[in-house]
Length: 156
Image (cartoon, rainbow, N blue to C red):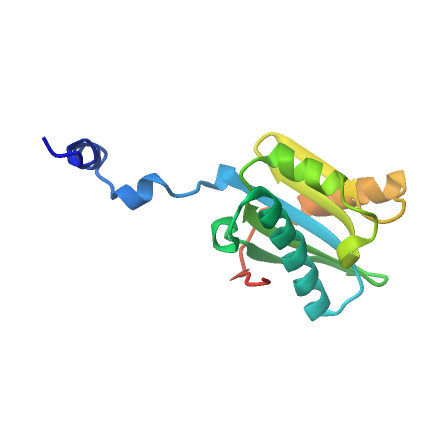
């Protein structure tokens, strides 16, 4: 009996290609809303690329596996820009811990709001953030929903 027979039977029963069995679902994606200081597009692209690239390196994820997608701008006020991204992160809790352990002001990112599965968290990456800033970041993140992918992101 061929070792491929179980896979062939599975393919016939489910009526889909084997490649489709391993596709990511929307639930596996993390929505990442980021508040940047400043308007420079290249700077934002470099910083999100570095942030997710460093995370991937630490946890053994290749850039292509994370399938980062840019969702567009949520708001732009008084020297800050809030943008939305989506990425495949293997473990949302690990990503959240990773963000909590970053040094303040690293990547020129002030705040991050993540939504994945049943977790939502707003994390301050500035030296300090007020309670009002936390509230506003969460509101902006949810007002920016639903996620509308604009482009596949190649910030690496």
